[in-house]
Picture 1 (cartoon, helix red, strand yellow):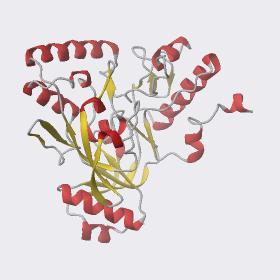
Picture 2 (cartoon, rainbow, N blue to C red; picture 1 turned 90 degrees about the horizontal axis):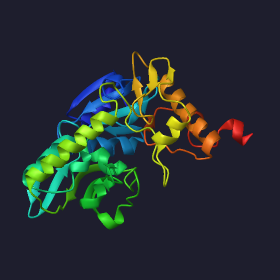
Picture 3 (cartoon, rainbow, N blue to C red; picture 1 turned 30 degrees about the vertical axis):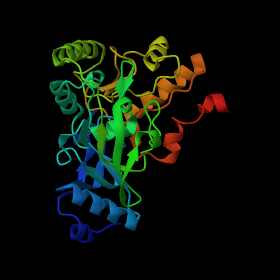
Picture 4 (spheres, helix red, strand yellow; picture 1 turned 135 degrees about the vertical axis):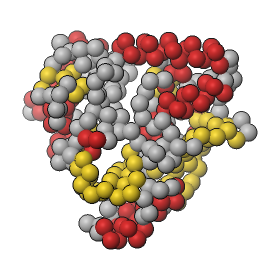
Length: 313
């Protein structure tokens, strides 16, 4: 265990002890982290991550917590939130450089005002650029990696720039799972900004009509299987509106779980297992998590990565 005294020697930002992560996740569930850190600047982030790596102390980088499910027991380690300090966007020549802590909505607004086309499909997606790059976020047939030139990351204690072709981008995936994303550089085609604003408005209306934006939620629980849609499969199993405790499979979008009142991570997790098992029993399709599980044991996680026990036995 890293002592507070040792941590304060290398970190200048705000430190909270046993901070409940339910305050920092989109679905509003989750237990405490041993340390919750708000770095003061970029140098602070790099120094503390290097420190944790040297000590072999677990750490987790978050932004807005939009794709996280944190265990009710919390996270035994340090959570580092980049949301407020890594927040610069700038144009260098014909390239847009965006810090990892910038909100996706801010990024979309910036690009549209500049007449840069390509970010409209991200409108309404919660989260920050760092998480969006790691997850290769996207919607309506587009992905954030479509316009990436390079990504700046902290990898093996060194700051390096990774070209798009070396980034391992795939559907809701990238080669940055073990890195700390610091910034990303994009290059976009130009288009009339009034047209871009109209497209964004239309996509926001479509998203708000189809997704449970009025409840704390997980975002998409599972990735879409090739040639199919997770929501369609889950709905076909009659699971819309299914409730465990304070968590419910959205009756608006079956690939979302919403917190309808004092949900626990256990409630959400049990619904995830149910969704996955029922889809497999009916369609023989194994759904793959899009939500990141934090603080769950290997045994628990295996319930969402291996064949359902009643099928495998």
